[in-house]
Length: 341
Image (tube, rainbow, N blue to C red; front, side):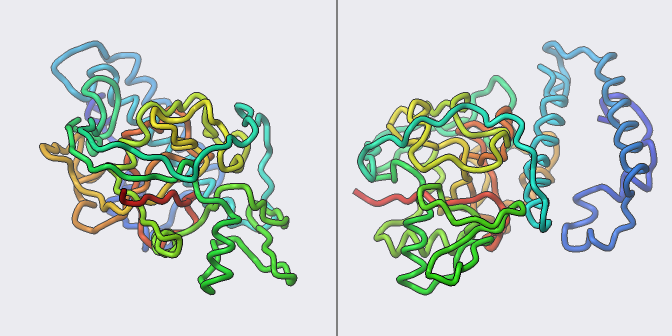
């Protein structure tokens, strides 16, 4: 943004302090970051300068790809909205924090009946974001892939199914589950202490737990290419997003937002672990900087797809690729399994 507006940094030292590349996550707790009133004042000043630049730039088609179709502003908004979800991940760790539920969002219909798994036929599928419209560099270029036929769970894995897995195998339960002393489970998230609803999608499982569950069920995790092929046509306007309800809808809800293949809740409710690791698509080109995606390609981060109840609606799309450490559990991640035909 400084480059677009040809501006000097507000405070060079603070700019370096809040540089996520210069200061990796592991050491951030030791940084002398701003607090309270000072932090909000700095944020207001940064936002004011950003809006000032917006008033003076031409966002129509032009030679500068940062400005064309307002790319830089779409990216800033999307990035800020992604951090809304990150903050919610942190807030759930605060004992006693009870979020205000202002608007529960689109109503969830009764859970839809249907088969356990649906078949995605063999064929050639378009993967990635179209050339027009905003998307991150790792979603492009759009390309075609040939996939064998496979089966995919019609709905995400429920708490009931995951509890059965834990009981039979002795595996570690999801984060924020505690035993109730009578063989059941309670959740402690967002200051609540209530019985686990068996019909909700399981959430707060890491990649290893997701793979172990899939193997126990005689299945596997889908590749991200399989996931995207199966998700085509899913409607984000009829999905549990935008952290309005502060929780998941029952597994099988929002059937009218199903994908073209009949998979339900592919967008919203819980992120879904895949068996793929983050890498560039054929012909990948970093834009607007390497540090958004490319620097992570060598680290074998598992890819997640689909968004969660805490994801902002304008951020998610079927081509959106998220990634995280395999052991991460505080994220709003669940499971959907696949099987070879």
